[in-house]
Image 1 (tube, rainbow, N blue to C red):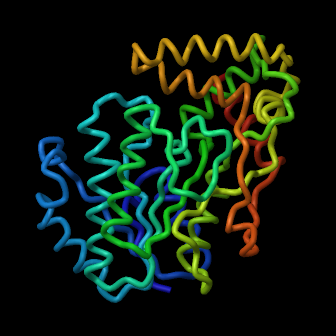
Image 2 (cartoon, rainbow, N blue to C red):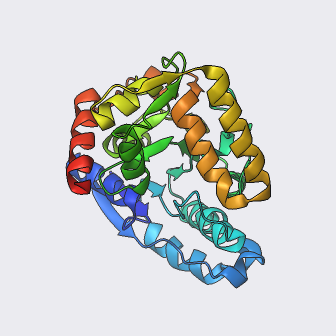
Length: 306
């Protein structure tokens, strides 16, 4: 198939381009549209030139994968986030629609559902931070421009180059490696290789994916994540104690925005989050990388830190 990857130079985009190429597809790597902060408030109407340019690049393609966006969940500049995570994806979606592309896959994030008890494939959101709002707004705008698009929501994505992975591995190997009791709760974490494989599947399958697809649970509990990345057994702390700390951090995050994203990371490490069944699983897709890859990732990250 002929597939364009918008934002192909980024973390997820480069992995998706590689996965598609390895499967034998003809991949066009397209630079993500750059939306000026000042233009973000003017919305999609100010992006006519960018839409026209991308439309020409998308002509004759079978699919477009949009990986553009700002991946920094700690970013507090609302204009920057809206420009990168909302307006830019909408430009890609409008261009794909104008070019008559058969399939658009927009890479969003599970962060849009925030602290909901279970991640699922509905349009229900919990926009607890500026970042979460920008990603949710991006979904809404993409759906507005391309009603048949598939929105894919990966959870926290890990790789050697990721700061969140380095931070998690550091905690996992330290005396602070703890999880809330009982430790067996699902942890929505994913390896970049699995995420790229899932996106490539969505872009090229001859089945019709639904409007929203979540990444399947990779089989890791909160305890597993820390044990595999840190090569040591984390300590299980009383659930009430962990909940009290998380509630305090959440309260602080309401007054200090920069605390909100980090408070959510702590909560995810301790409590995890349930995940509904994914369409990908029912369609026959399975993650190519498992626990050994997680263990190897932890070894590499720890050796780099050392």
